[in-house]
Length: 104
Image (cartoon, rainbow, N blue to C red; front, side, top):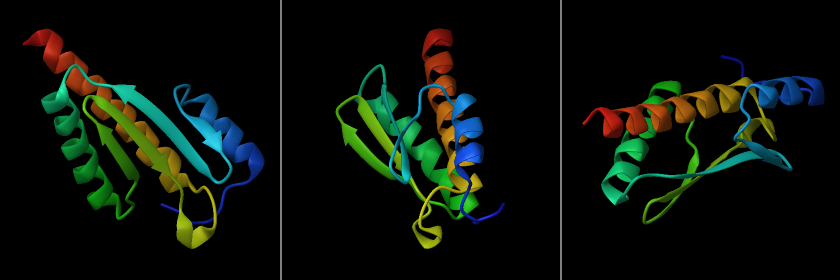
């Protein structure tokens, strides 16, 4: 996946598909609530596995069951396709954890 910096139009199009993410300068951010602390940690573990596989690592803030994620490609000086792809995987991890909780 390209580490080239995205254009403003590409960023806008990417964020349109990620409605829970907002842009702050050269970073996209999302906050999410997990059911409880163990659930939050399971999400972080899932995100860590995806991030490691992509060789692209988010800033993660854990506050009990509140998770904060921030994505930017520092080597590119802004947002790249990697940031949008990892944001989608973070959304997937959050949905999967919520579905597992409902099924269990």
